[in-house]
Image (cartoon, rainbow, N blue to C red; front, side):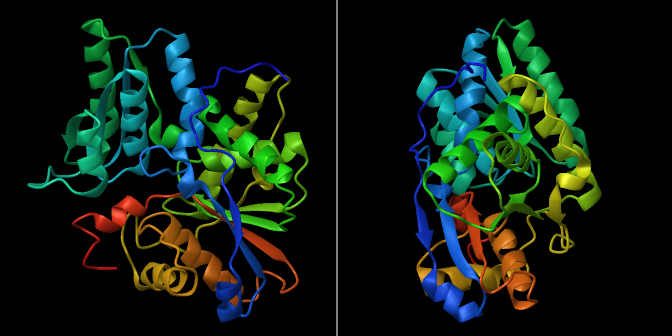
Length: 321
């Protein structure tokens, strides 16, 4: 395996905890949770693992500015801004949404970390403005590095390939890993880690906003490309990608009754906080699948908590949860 540049700033390994009261309440399989909300950077979250590799790559390329994009309450952008502040980069974030009169939650944190915010009213214009922002920074000699949406590049996906190794070293024998999937980097990394490190269980992504067809194609391509950074290319096929898009019909960032109930169940039975966009939706899907008998009662299901709780305090969610 090749040596890969990495900055070790995440608080690893993150703990794995049993969820006995939630398991009993649902009458389903044994439930565990991997606490990647505790990775340490700016309230933690799954993007920290990816940024260990992405920021190292930016440093190796001589970059001075990290540029990325996402939704107005993007967890990824919050952690990118924090990483930039920690390692002395400038940061520009291109965020979709109307600029609010008062910043809250992730957006407030972005500003505290010193990021310059560019708001884009219409999501269809975000890619164009993101590229313009990158080109402008390059012309000014600010040596930008483009951190992809969600940190989901072959480099970023390595964070979750090595997370699988970490889980196996923790000797937790789960039949399933269930998690939120959207831009595909976490999903691709887990699949690659499964192949490289020999995890025998199944990896199931609950889609936040993408179709199963898109996820199968995109995640398999991303995992295959990421494998080249480790050495010999491993072909991951679309048929290997397990994804469920039954719970994202309301659209990205739309809090439905299913998410609200999932957030309350985790809080009431395990004193665990989920977020309204990602883990809330993934947990809602997992809970529905448990109640439908999708998982066998003698199986162990590990829920990957990817963080994002800061969004609970966003103006658009605080009074709806």
